[in-house]
Length: 269
Length: 259
Image (cartoon, rainbow over all chains, first blue to last red; front, side, top):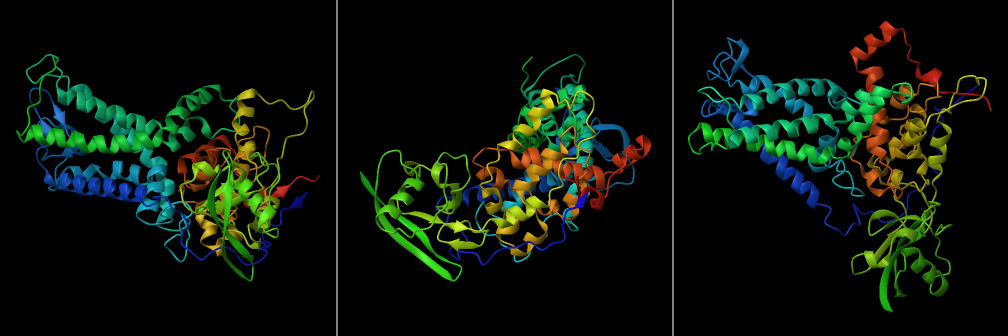
């Protein structure tokens, strides 16, 4: 047995050639970072504003609608009807602030969003074959970026939220006076829950935990089937990431407009 | 036939500059055809590396209009109108004109601990189709090293070459880590000495791969998750304790079986 000489210095062979330019790309490489910055900034501004509003997040009639930014509503000050069993009695701020760290953490540590914001906000690099904007680079090897490795825990938390938001979507079929009904709001909550499930199930950590982590598929046939089911979803992870992000904000907008009386939640049946 | 202006980097380690060549362009030609025409007509000393002219040998990697591409697979009619810029790969030391010294990659290749199979059972080793298929994608690599070239970890930070294997070798590590017969555990090695943590998954390697290997999604991220299993996941740690599985150290993993 011979050890690999991993401590040997790499022989680089000489100086680099080519022009000293940040990039020679002639296409519109800047367009994608501009779009990413625009959409993510708009989302952060809107969600921060919505989280601090502390009103218009629950509709009682004709069906129960709860904004995803406030579900589960865990403060004792929550609007009656929007609460689940457990409540914090001493919390006086917006109840959204109690829970948003979990979906926020899930998206912040998501492999797809990392790609997007490292490129668009941190310019590391802004686009392929365009110079990195930083003199030194340590990647995700040091604090705080080493914390990106906690992604799977936010994924677990995200699953809990998906279950709760699915419950909200099912609850949105319940008429306030009894019986079953469906409104545009019900449909909005169902689409929102579906997109969040697709985003979570297409997650790279989910794919790894369900089957990607095994050495032999033959030895783990059930996990192989999970992995095989999740792989096509994983290919679409970027699409689900954007769709679920935009739709969760639109869901809050819809519930807010209905709760404030600016919009009527029309019944489908 | 139309004319096209080629802006080609001419020079070596002592310096260089662009030189313009105006050449005839025929239908269906690729950049490598034009380079050959320039060699045949105006600049017989223009250096470029090529071999198969079919996108399978990975020799003619260069940067065309600023993006790493194979010269033999880049059709002239798919490039935007105007002068076409051809430069050597930026990440590697220049030898001359469009030829670079890619020995960094061979150094990194030497450091990959080889497959460590169990003793041969009676009847030989057996692998099942689903396990064979998993690694098949990684074996499509033609070693054009464009993924290494575009990776900003070493493209923009020369100092990282000492401790960063790069995307081409992460797919090799992934292939070995996913091999059902392999008994080596390279996770510590990948984290501590091969610099997996330097990758911030901007996916440029995947974008430039001429074989369309999903380098980031199918190799780098699964490796990162395996490193999380070994180092950042207390639940996995507890699972290992209960099932009495061990995790080899980097030193143990960095051992190659004798030839």
